[in-house]
Length: 174
Length: 387
Image (cartoon, rainbow over all chains, first blue to last red; front, top):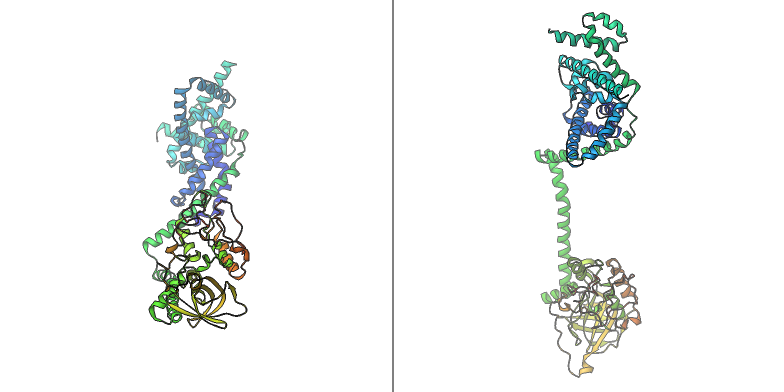
């Protein structure tokens, strides 16, 4: 019952909500969606608090893991909706794509991050945005440090390519 | 260690060095063999890091609002956890002392109820025997008389009793339907008046409903007046005799005469002696018909069944139950002369104010027949007829 005490959760929320929100925001690129998903993260954490026990993994790492799962679920659902919409309203999708393209031009890094795989995104965001060490990232994503290093390497290559491609494309348009 | 692993380690070390404040040039110098490959990746890492500082995510506008989601979720989880805890405890079996307490909490009040009921039944039986004084018939008659409510409902001369009728109307149930049967029956058993079988006067000893008031000595008896001596007379009927005493405080409606049917309300002492508060003379059968009065015939059931379908004394105005008790009291104590006028059934569906003593409802045949439903306004006055 102590795990369900409201003051404890208020403190957890106050301490980590912003970090969870930022992590999700960099992955989905939308403020309101990120806020909603961040709230989902804490609700899921509450539901699964009985499964959490401290074994070297801090609570924030556990929250990041939930945030990752929430984000992946969101993306899958968004992809399903997009496929459904493509079949029904191609004109509107084309307009939306153009809008997204315009948005990506304004924020190359955000769009470049979203070209990464989920795991690569995790590593990049946790490593360079959340400022975690390699060991901490490995605890969050549940992979060995060597695997995290490899992921980090591939993620940075992909990121470099995406940034270069975006820069080149923008230069060509200009 | 493979070449790739070497590179990954070098990259990781370079990133850590940058994070610790080293310059890019210094880092590349430290990893000269991978410098060419490291440079673009380190630039991407620096760009990401710079992006995080330069373009932080927009300030969340709804994190505070979203906490209410978490707050609600916490409450739900707490409730669910409590339920699970209780269920688990009951499933696994509580300690013996908890079961003992639970058992006692159930049995002690139950025992008290049983004991109270036993005392009440014994007392009522004893009172019945004592009041009749003439064996089982008298006792049964008296007890039966307590089940039905008295001539109050039918005495055309007693305005106060008419008020009682008024007070015993069924409670309005709703704007759309008849009163629920349970409600109606409950009211009937406690307050519904009972009409005698016919005008010739069934000498039935009626008593107040005992279901709500408990054993009492104040009661109503009816029968034929005989043996008038001064301020006393004998009332014969219902298988018993009552010696009635009147005094200056007694309200007398009609003329007391030998052979007349009358109902007497008052305090019954020693089972037979009635100190009358009210004497209502219904009819002088001896003088009107010239024939000797008929032997008293008990009502068919004495439980209110005889008035089924003939709630002529009722009005269908749907007085709330909580007003009725007061109305009974008022009617008994403060009758009005105007109450002798029979009132037609109202049943207009209008909510009515609490019953006052001036209201009537004593007119036989003036009310509805008990099968009507009050113009469909849901205020049926009870086809149950006082059952």
